[in-house]
Length: 349
Ligand SMILES: Nc1ncnc2c1ncn2[C@@H]1O[C@H](COP(=O)(O)OP(=O)(O)OP(=O)(O)O)[C@@H](O)[C@H]1O
Ligand SMILES: [Mg+2]
Figure 1: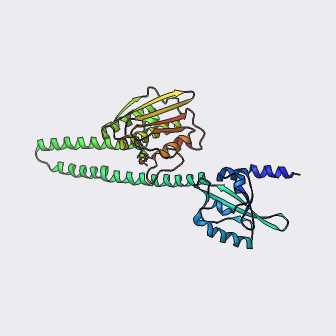
Figure 2: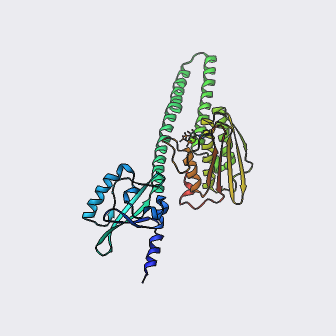
Figure 3: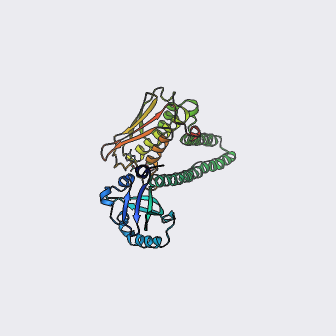
């Protein structure tokens, strides 16, 4: 049989913040996790109204709900279907889920035990997965536009030109038209190959990471006039498929950011292997930027930085970004040679 002090230990061991609130809404007891979550000391909270932990705008409504609950108390989640926020001592709010259980802790005195769970990690994951779905949809739109505007139009024009070629009487004209058509077909093939490389570089399967990145760097140079100085001799041979793809995508995104946002026309990419990990460092000397808090998600449409971190995390790696306005940007991605076992991870392209 547990003793009184054992129950206190159980109370304190709960991963949720626990509050014992009396019929007047006064906090009578709290556990260690509540002190950590809300930032107030035990002494500051004991004996105060529970509304202290609720954002000012919702306090009146909370008092009304609390009184109504007191008339017919029953175990249930609080504010089902609502996004509840709790107020911390420093004035910040956290998204929470709250369960209420009525209890007669001392004879004749009704109390409510409130278990408060911080759901910010879950909320963050939900937002991130929403953004990933939106990004995938955006990518499909982009591909369909590119296929339609670029390749389909080119092919239709080539078909018409081939038809006209058959009607051309002048041998010299016919020959130069044929040469122009051949040149345009070659250009279209180059474009299609570039697109395939952007989607899923075939070299990753055949020539490995350095060969695939070498082609990607040449494409960046051809399309944007942006030079990538790379040192990556024999890199990546030891990486497994999932880790290889993660690094490829991270380098691709970091360079894409340098091309689009840094305001410079060159960057360096270096690779280093040590202790069962491979680190890729992408550095530009451009404008840099104010780095958002790693836990905060960027605004709509900016999923690159968050995506890099997620990709690395999926194979047990990390991404560190160092930057500030005017000081360039360094992205450092480290992945283990054998990626952390993610179900289906190696096919997760
Ligand atoms: N190398 C860089 N130099 C300067 N600014 C950068 C650099 N990398 C990122 N940024 C800034 O950080 C923001 C967020 O980058 P992120 O990759 O998350 O989104 P994005 O590139 O704007 O959009 P997306 O990658 O989703 O297409 C960018 O909009 C840009 O302002
Ligand atoms: Mg980006």
